[in-house]
Length: 151
Image (cartoon, rainbow, N blue to C red; front, side, top):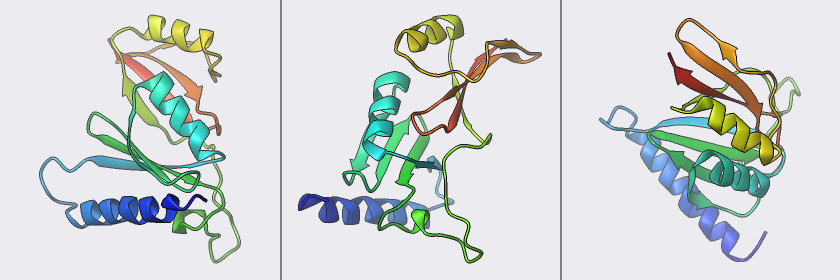
């Protein structure tokens, strides 16, 4: 951890705690936490491939990203933060699973082609549904992200 990382981590955590205390405030962003294998690699993926911007980052220990009204909190599997601590029964936080954020797009086919060229891994092909079309991709840690184009 660099010298500035503890300061940045404190600043970011202060921002998150302060924002969380105003939970019922109008316009409060929705927050999702993803457990990731590598915070910097995940930041690069979400900013470079999916249009997020960085609100704050403490090296490899934590990051807060934003897109629209969503804040994405990235925490590593090990580290100083509470999100990486084992549960009382011994289970440890890990990336993956099926719960996911949904990112709306107006050009699903074009986004899929762009992301495939960039080497992004998809779990499936585009699914045609009643309300629109969707596809699941994995972030660098294996967390799913759904791209959805309303019908």
